[in-house]
Image (spheres, helix red, strand yellow):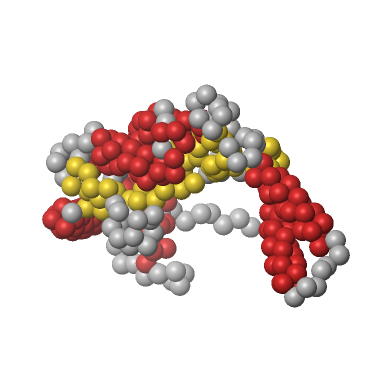
Length: 337
């Protein structure tokens, strides 16, 4: 409980006590029953009631998240130039009063959803892009009153700063910003640039009126029914085109695979043929070398050919019959004793 509330409660108690004692004493006097020191009690209660009421009217407790604007009947301009800071403060009773303003961060939301924003119903911002497309923007502005400009906010806006300043300036800046971009830029690569543009312009506008923009949140962008339908058709066409492209690429890959397989088979056949040819050449060279060796042996020993002829007839024949008129095929070796 604040001390100012406690003092106000005590003041109310003593005022009730004063009134109650006065009525009681009056009734007893009418009955010829004089209450000793009754008037003294009434006067004491009245004095306490006046003192506590004066204190209650002069003491103001300012919370840390608040600042107080003093409206004064004795100040030259009708108000104090400096706002009251947090803590227990004193003002002139009955000729000054305090208007409290929060300096904590606040959020103002404008949404197409009925119960999301400060205004029930569709409160989204209707805007047109540079190429003439109509879009609907959901946004939130996070802001706070500049503690050094609380008095200015009270003078120019009072408690209307949220609806008449933040809301109005935000909607105007958003419409102006959207008109600088095409619809495709708004929903794609230029979205962050759009948010930055709004943040900068809105910050300047509100700062001139004592409000500091903490952040701007672009919550959602909704398109008109016609444009949404055209975007859907375009996306369907793009998906179909991508699918057809994938099919073509798949066919090309399959054809390339067949070509590579044929090339591999062809190269394998060529390599096999080359291997067979080289093997035949080596074999022919070996046969030629063998024939040369045989020829050299026959030249040096002619009877070797006859011997090879006889051995080839049958490996089991150790003697053979010849006609009487036939000479020996070769001269038998002489027998040694």
